[in-house]
Length: 543
Image 1 (cartoon, rainbow, N blue to C red):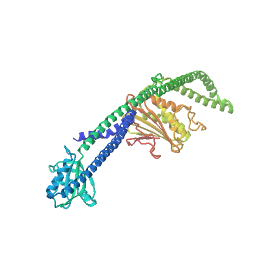
Image 2: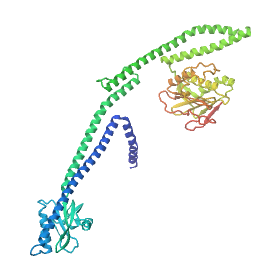
Image 3: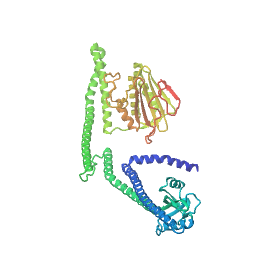
Image 4: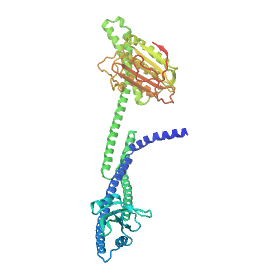
């Protein structure tokens, strides 16, 4: 029972989100539903107004006819009573009342269109009615109005009969004086059964017509909206195909209306975009080929220059001081030039899709420790200590050791270059599917928006700032491509005055995709910049 109720709760929680998603995902549904709702409102208002006007008209006509008939009946009754009082003998009160009610009832026709009640005002005289009409049908306030005002009065109420029946009706009353008997009240009771049947028929007709009209309007809205939505959906599908790289995809043009002109404009835009994309692709291929060709062509003269420079550099002690200094500068710049050529060749391999991953089982912790050890001379010269912290168990990953070493070396050297005497923290941690390496410095940091620019080729946060480590400006771009080649991530975070943090995350097994990183990218604070997500303690600390 509890499991069933749990599933019901899940369905009830999911249902509003499903309705919200369907509602916002379908213009067709929104237009049709809105048209239907507005149609219901309009038809309901019109129906209420129509029924109200018809009801008022019927009741007004009935009221005028009843008042006229009652006025004539009261006059006729008074005439009959006055004539009876002038005869040679005066009938008894009961006989007089009976004859009067009978004469008035004869005017009702067959079937009778009204009933008559003759009630004594003082209550001590005989009273009569027609067709078993109950005296209680006349409301007390109507009797009081007739007696007090001494003139015609009427009201709407239920007409009740002695056999228990009851119908809605209109009762009109007037004072009447019977000679030798006393004051009376004469009431005409008009049933409204026919008017009620007419209103019921009209109400059913209005409701049926309204429902039919709403269905027709919904169908019309559905058809009209479809004529607009179908081309829009076709445009969405075409744009999606274009975004997926199918540059030859186009919309069908039918007719010459606004939608046809939209399709033609869309196709013209697609043609222009396809042309520009092809031009950019061709330009990119030319640029990549140029970089690759230049890099390869420069290696031969560079090798010759390197050999000659090495010979001169080995004999620099016998040269005078200016010449020896020039030879040293030449050797340094040749080293940078050679590094630039190597990086350009590597970038050209990535651009050409020729980069190959030579994966093997590697202990990432040992690899990071060896890389940091190689950067130790640079750290000592810069006065920036490097600290390594390993969290949790050993991190054995299937990766290309040369490429991971290049990524970590680049991150550590950049951190040393941009750091300060607070040092550089390198953290390593892994979970069941991935291993993360974070490199944190405490230098000037990155401004908002620069964390996505640091991986651009030749990008520098401060173009006027001189490089102290001889970097080529391609290191982070190559590192990003190396991380992607592993199926991993390379991300950056920075804040002015708080330094920067770079996180490399690669899968332990190349066949298993990663969804979370063991280490957070943004440091929690400056005292303990990075902690694993599962709260494991430090297993090993090296400086």
